[in-house]
Length: 114
Image (cartoon, rainbow, N blue to C red; front, side, top):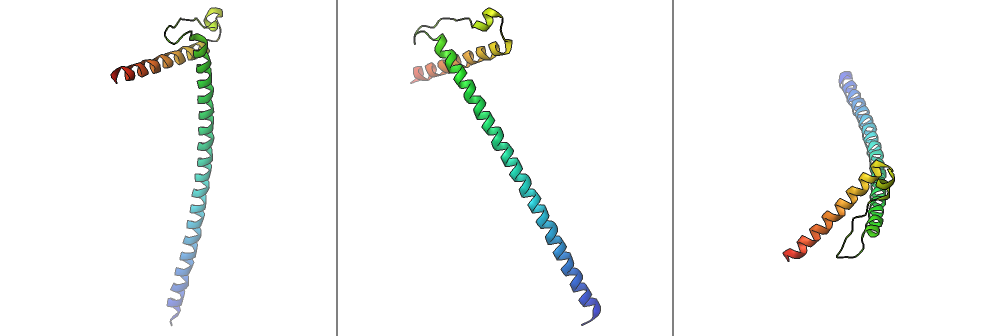
């Protein structure tokens, strides 16, 4: 064998080893980032579910307070409007009532179409 052929073999082998090490480091970094992303998304989802449940409970308590009978409803002015309380909370409460009314209306329409 000639010396340039042996030299080329070792150069090729070194290139392959370095490429493998770089690829391994890249894959490890990518998997690490994917793990971080997954953990962050799970935490965001947990917070979202928690927020949804809190809002649903608040809306349910508002609905049970304002509902007198299944057929007749009365308009109850929230305490915040009477006392000039937190405006954002009042807006949220009104949005919740609107959402509830839309839901009731949709259920009514579905029952009447059947």
